[in-house]
Length: 552
Ligand code: MSP
Image 1: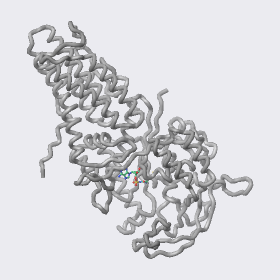
Image 2 (image 1 turned 30 degrees about the vertical axis):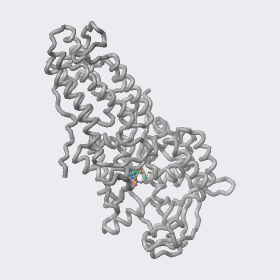
Image 3 (image 1 turned 180 degrees about the horizontal axis):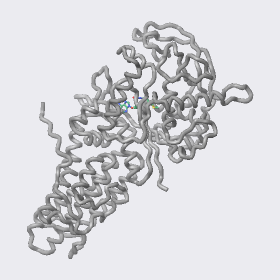
Image 4 (image 1 turned 135 degrees about the horizontal axis):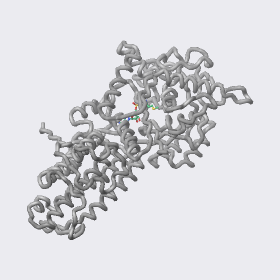
């Protein structure tokens, strides 16, 4: 049975347009999913949109449209973008979907009905009235964090009034020690490692429970609480949104005692999330919610926490991307100008998973031109050109070699074909290790070692001179060099395919116009010797044309 891999992303808020932060996360998850498929694993990739909440309700009011109309329009933008960028998910999670709403209500009912025999009350939820300072303008309760230096709430919150409100709460505090123990006993719970201490500290400081309802009087755009809770409440947007990971999972059923065979074939998931939503949402609320639903410690998901894309400023500094600064980068626009592949490559290649990075269009162009146009693209082009010119595109795999793998090229440089094969094997191993640890930029760097080695081989062996030499040994050397270059290209194409699926396909079309190689890419095929003796190569067509920018 193949191994299974369940991957999710955060579901994006539909109160604004998608930006490169959203795009990075979806591409990262897509790349990890494609890598697992390349390894032969069975993958389920879930992503979607978070459509409820106060912000959507407010934006809809401002624009005088129905909230559903507003979120439908923005949702279409997200889905269109994922199509453009080649993000291939298995299931779309939209929180206004009936399937999801039903599941959230079943979860709430289950938690409400699970009573403590001593009190007859729910073990997980309770009802309470609380008072606090409420901003009428922003339609939210305020905490001391919102107070200015003078201790007052600033004009952006005014008018502010003291209000009492009855709500439902989800108990967090009784589970504090359990959560600390979980963090300590499951080193794979959270990556990168430094986030573990951060979460641990936050849990130690945990002081209150989670309010999971909003009175319908101030928020209508949400999932109404089930009947057991009485009328007039909707579900708090985070409690609603987090449930998407199970409501859209294959085979999940929230009924107590349900048989979850199909579900457990994939679960636990790897949740890919940004650093801002680890604490408290995923690291505290979600884990305790799962515990309440009967998930064991071993069934807790893994959290892969990525950093943020900031913006590189003209002076070389870094600033946060924000609407008010007007520096938000639109991924659709970038893909339109440079191509989806260029954007995927840049976002994956220029960020170390878990760390922040600075977006710069200049870097995007520079990386594309250096790594893809000049290195990989150039190797493809020159290899196919030379093979066509000197051998009608036909490879000779088993050319006898009087001098084995090592010879001195026509320009006096030492050529070592065995070293190239070893470098390729090492690169494949490095690639697999890095990708399995979600380090895509390092995985890519390992893969591109092979095209660098191929280009070095061209420089050292000077095939254009070998081709002119009348020596029989040089005729054979040329065959061996061309075979090595084509093999290097075949292997690099397999390795980069999760990041650059279309380019990898295009490279295969050119390397193998007769369709002799399997088109279902497998990492197991990244072994030396896949091209047969007498294999016919195709004509070169640029896959990575250089990005030329005319200076302003
Ligand atoms: N709707 C919630 C998530 C609910 S998950 C059950 C949310 N939405 S969001 O649209 O604000 O953010 C979606 C994802 O994008 C989050 O993982 C967030 O960290 C990520 N990013 C938002 N801005 C980002 C950058 N500038 N850079 C990288 N990722 C960032 O949070």
